[in-house]
Length: 98
Figure (cartoon, rainbow, N blue to C red):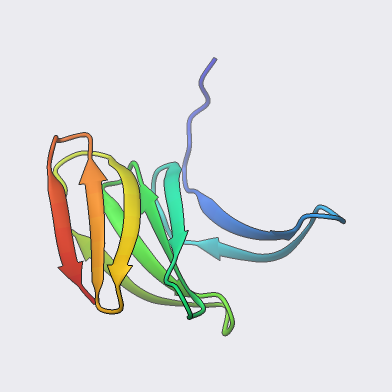
């Protein structure tokens, strides 16, 4: 069963209480993957809307959007401090300098 999605919200939850601490609206499709940059409060979210958004979880703020895939973003990995690797359903890997 599928439901129409008008917008998606990335949520930060406290696992024991299961209450929403912060919502990060912005993606126009389902969020497919998340990763933190090691040693920082930067969170990367990949989506079926073909974009990667960068969030600062500590400040609870949107930082930037990365584009490059022609199809859904399937997975993201932070390789080192300034590089992010994303794999898409379009059978490509995109390496971003951020």
